[in-house]
Length: 333
Ligand code: SF4
Image (cartoon, rainbow, N blue to C red; front, side, top):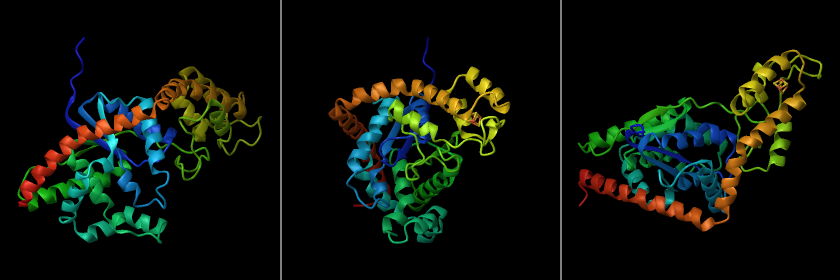
């Protein structure tokens, strides 16, 4: 059997070190990362710790959060053989390229971005220079590895468009073709709601379910999930179409379970407690192999750090080459 032909070039994605990952992270990003490492010639996944500095108040958990995140990525199936997995700050060239990019980026363009305005609203006491330049650093992350594809949800499209513009500006200013305009790899990323049923799943809102939670903790969180608000009593028929538990069943449960709930919920044949217990069981079964792998990796933290160091060394070889070409193109002595 011959292996499927891979897409040419590199796919790149980065994520902030947010520690233990949750179902939203898994369904929204990690699952896709794992699939893409088999589809592209090279896959590059970066834990963007420098980006985190623009918003974190303290760095005391940064190292542990980086470790926990790497642990989850590896346990979920990211392979050091197939992907370069590393930490952004291990590649100083990204800061160099970001500086060069800042010279071809109008300040007004950055301050006009809706994401920047949102950050000002969120942290009015800490509007730092890094926050304004955040998209420039992100563009450098992508361009440094000459990534051809960046997997993002539709809501992230403006960021990729911004990167494309910066690359175009750079290439135009210095009359070069050394940098590559990345393409957005639009993916059908499901919006994973938190257990409150109202907001996107997020650690900061404490409405998340961690991948690495124990089966008991998972069950506890699932039992807190908000269901169809119209279904006040067990005897009331429910509407699975407006229930987040049902949405999750559709992702993690068998077709048979989904069909049964779809029917029984509407005629009050199943209660929400039993429905949630069933989901918790199915989710725990689904996560069991992940938890086993995670525990194995966690027995040897040095091995996890080695993966990141090795990934960084491989990524840095590319980064150094790009920076050399960039400096040449600029005409730096
Ligand atoms: Fe939601 Fe299940 Fe309750 Fe129906 S029975 S409202 S699908 S939790």
